[in-house]
Image 1 (cartoon, rainbow, N blue to C red):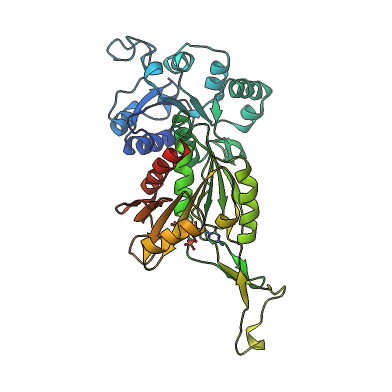
Image 2: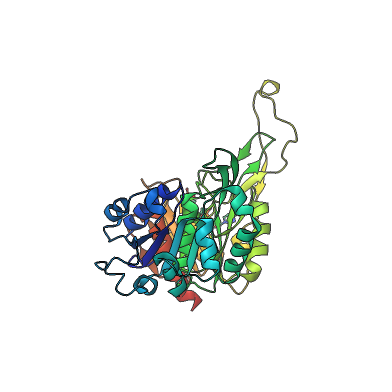
Amino acid sequence: MADKMKTIVLGVTGSIAAYKAAELASRFTGEGFRVDVIMTESAQQFIAPLTFRNITGRPVVTTMWDIDSEFSVEHVALAEAADVVLIAPATANIIAKMACGMADDMLSCTVLATKAPVVIAPAMNDNMWSNPFTRENVAKLTKRGFTFVGPARGRLASGKMGLGRLTGLDDIYGITLQALGRKGDLAGKHIVVTAGGTQEPVDPVRCLTNHSSGKMGYAVAEAARNRGAEVTLISAPTALAAPPGLKIIGVKTAEDMLKAVQEAVKKADALVMAAAVADFRPVKASSQKIKRQDLNELTIELEKTPDILAQVKGSFIRVGFAAESHDVVANAKEKVKRKGLDLIVANDITEMDCGFGADTNRVTIIDSKGKVENLPLLPKGEVADKILDKLITLLR
Ligand code: PMT
């Protein structure tokens, strides 16, 4: 799990998007991180330090020269305390200063002195972003290991549309967690995760599918990313936003998923199959829409889809899920054996708040020796971390 006691130093610079940094500070603080905010002088023209002070419950640094501040005595104190430095929004000015190694205010000083990863979320006029000076500065910082997230295209402070808007807060949040986890217990590992329900076409408008929302698989993928893994998420169609910092491959059918998994596992340390793969598909999908008025009844002949977990073998750890409606443990044990798995995560999809669509899940984890561990009802993010805890022992 991401270590909640870690310190995020949030640098806020002078952009109209500065108010959005308050939302980020609130989210990180709510998640239990210690958030220390440094505001540049121009940031204080857009939003008051008091806002951040009340949100984080921590003193806000606004100058290097406040003799009463616990941080100004030792001007690199925050640089040393930081597990990650996030600058959001970052103006062209702070980017230029960092690229030149300048240290003329508390934020640039902290960036120059820190050994923590630095994440930069730019926000500026589109001409400033595309200016060759800024392009060079961004390239220089990227080469030195700084991580950029955004900017996004959209309406800018000038009123025109362009590339320069602070990117979505979900993306900034995800990339910051990824940077925090860079030295996590899955660092250096490549994990392939599948999610969502496959769709098997009946005709151009209809398909056979199931109720999977993708939440469980996405939670595993994000948790693995936050612990330092390189993650490939192979996703059947879902309504979920693409999590940042992952390689995402969209697929529709079981056949597509099989091909994507076969390719991805070539360099994987583990495969986690959380997807609800259709077990059957129409033998032949109609190329034209089947018309209701032409038929009194319709029989669709089905055939088995490929069993991905059973087919994809190699020197990587294989974790399956078992969606069961009865005899959960017995059925899951049988699947571990039949599919030759290292681990299976069984959920009773008839239970309230579990399985399909829910934000929570109650699972039983069973290993290849038949050892059973029952977990209580937990948010899917926490279930994901428990699965990864087990996976790590297998990877060792
Ligand atoms: O997506 P959510 O709404 O969050 O819901 C989560 C979930 C209920 C989908 C998830 O927790 C879950 O149980 N996923 C597996 C669903 C499933 O297909 O179970 P199964 O018992 O039919 O299959 C067993 C395993 O074989 C699964 O890992 C499955 O991915 C895999 N399989 C199944 C069929 C197939 N043709 N190929 C496979 O590899």
